[in-house]
Image 1 (cartoon, rainbow, N blue to C red):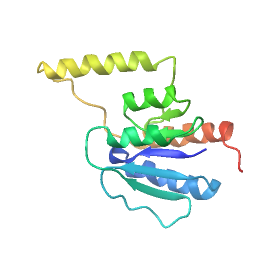
Image 2: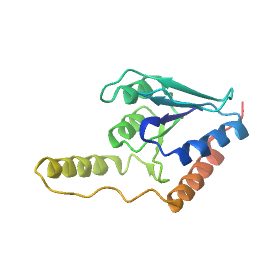
Image 3: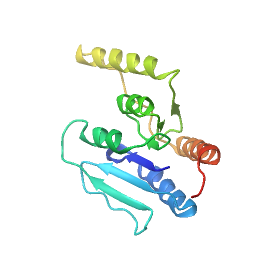
Image 4: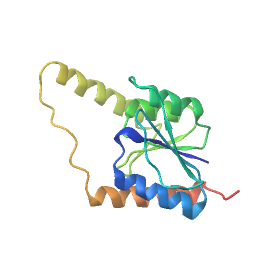
Amino acid sequence: MKIWVDADACPGVIKDILYRVAERLELEVILVANKLMRVPGSRFVRSMQVPNGADVADAEIVRLLEAGDLVVTGDIPLAADVLAKGGYALNPRGEFYTDATIAQQLTMRKFMEELRQNGVDTGGPAPFNQADQRNFGNALDRHLTRNFKRG
């Protein structure tokens, strides 16, 4: 199992949690971004820079991930692609995307996008907070307890 991170928009505190998990479990964590990412010196953590462009990082993650890998992302279309390929997708607020909910999430995303295109102010997500950080850590821990076996 590897953990892939859609790193351009991932909060720094979430990356820090992932760095600690990588060291503790000796688990590979790969951050994929359009810009150069600094990561701690670790044999378990690396960054991968991809060319600029819409969804280039997403496409690279989907291309490289294997069934059973975990992807940390807030991007619903990427999460749908991850699920279709047999991976797991977790958002930085600690919520897993699932086969049972992804179609509804994609529909809602499209609806909100249409509202914004028509000039409707839809607001935005609530600010990221400590409860979100805690929820992420707990969800990640539960997932790894169930799914990660040291090789």
